Image (cartoon, rainbow, N blue to C red; front, side, top):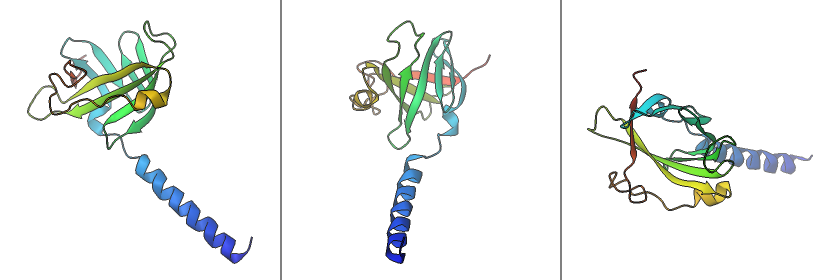
Length: 144
C-alpha cells in the first residue's frame, strides 16, 4: 500500500466509524427492566429481548433510538405469527404516573425486517388512539 492508498483507507474507515457510532446509540434506561401494563401483564425488556409473559418473545434485531422504535423477530414458539417480524414503537409519557412509557405494536406479522420497518408510524401526539386506532400500551415498573 502506498501513502495515498493509506490515506484513502483511513478516510473511509473514519467515515464508516462515524456512521456506526450514530446508529449505535444507548438505549434509554427507562426502557430496560421489568414492567407491568395497565392490564397487569408482566414484561421484561433488555437490549436483545422484549418478553411479554408468560410466553411471547420478540428478539430485537435493530434499535432506532432517534425515531423511537425497534425491529424484532417473533420467537418460533410464539402462539401467533412465529418467525415473522415486528416493529415496536415507544414513547415516553409526561405526567402520567405511575406509567412512564408506552409501546405500540406497529407491525407484528411482516415477512421481513425491512417490511416491518417501513410500516406506518404511530401518532405519538394522540397516545389514546395513535397506535393504529388503539392506545399505546402504558408501562410502569413491575411490583413483582
